[in-house]
Image (cartoon, rainbow, N blue to C red):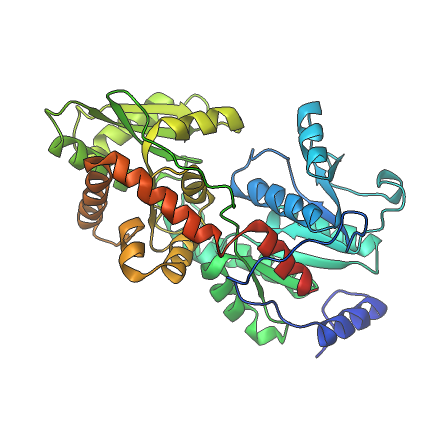
Length: 425
């Protein structure tokens, strides 16, 4: 194997030796293992995030969960963030994670806790990958992991790129991911869709196999019952500015169809969207009514928030959660719905949809993983029928959601994901 581009000779040699003697990651679905005692850290891990809360969507959510899982597995973990409030610092500390505030994302030895020398440095895509690259260079014996969260060539066709040439835009973004990944110790892809894509992307580079990290479904599933009252909410949440990518038009049309078929019954079906950029709620609500084809559909829009209490309350009030994304590297919004025990429908093209299809019998997967095709009318009809089925007997739908989470949690947990990642190093 040729020296990785841009590395000093001694670091390139270390990287080659490490890759040669390290085994590939084990497949998902492995049994859980007891973590080592906290008094014997396995690695000193430096994770480059942007915030402890999920201020920028899935990246911070995944980084936070991974940091917590690595700490629970016996690692000493420091997470670099742009800012942190006292409650956030205390929350991280309760999981054994030390937050290091650095607005510029730089890390100096003097900033780190006494005795902490990074052995593993984690960067997330193009967002913090370059910061992880700089930090790893400052600690030559460290190994850098490059986590990829998105596939530009898959999501950019559905995004507003501001008049730029879409092909060139995607090519530049993909090239940046590859450049950061080729000099990393290992590339780690989140979920099956991204793993499959980046395994192909890195094939010509003679790099070590791309690892796969499947987020966990938790192990504390509790039975939920439908929310009381006669306002039955169909909820879509997440950043809503990329409306076509996130399938807001599909969700609006499908909810309208389901609501119309249930008209005259005791409960009223409402469509709720949590995720509008500040000051755009009225504009988005008008678009949703247009997309729905039913001006009488009750539509409520709320601005994007990172407040865990608000998000938990939204989920607690929901009768159904939708994630009809036309493309999604993984789909943490759908995962949040499943974790909350709410009947949740996810798109087949998403990484979460693929993971569910892999993990469940075909008939069970078909109840929660729905197609998203080029025919928007047919797609909306498929989703409308699934919404109707969930609302037909909400008690039964919530019971199915609880059983589904328990089945998934038996095979996909954050402790198992952290253990598998550590074994690969």
